[in-house]
Length: 310
Image (cartoon, rainbow, N blue to C red; front, side, top):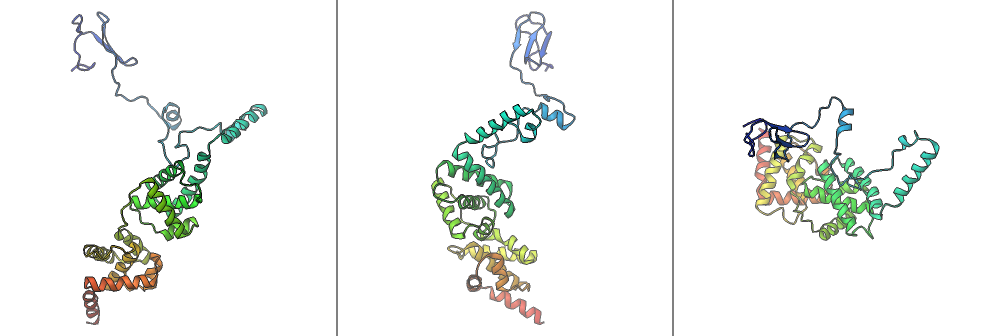
């Protein structure tokens, strides 16, 4: 194979004096002028850069598109304010008028997205959500605005509902209580909006897995890794006997963690566990009794108590 590719000689004159023009992507025979190839692909580096300034000047593409910006990162503005103040008075006034008209001619959807996505970023930052969840929530909200689902509802409730749907899709455990605290919207309103948006947009979301909440609850209660593993084991057993169906995932997860803490002697009160999980003590007590009865966990707790006495 030659440097010019798989072609070794000219099919017209049989010459081997071939030249490859990188600028035009052509292979030409120098003897007869026959063009052997005119669409060669150059796989070499496009340029060399030694500092950030040269890379920015030579770069031909920008940042990837994202739903977290109202124009998906593709829009442009009429100058920045810092740059405009460098102009003379007459030119400065002209560009300020252009900036004002650019904002005025934006559509109602764009104006809505500007405000809503800023609120979405604030709530996402408060809850410390990953970028993938924020991107998915912004996509869901954008679709909701385009379908006219926001009309008649508060922007904040739709933002919170979109974030909750994104958390459920990416299996990031966040409760409605946490979203209510971060957004300032009532828990019932967020749940109602979440169900409406997912139904209208045809978003299929699987039920939450209680095991996803174990790590967060255990970290807040400062429980050992051994207790966490036991709690996950209890939940897996409960799922096999269909004890988790029809019950809130946070309540059953908190009860499993409470039982595991008792088994390993890490005493935590039902009130402490309930506060961390965002449920009532009655819920913890009921789920705790169901786990003990259905899974025969009383034996394990009695064994621990006997060992302590000895």
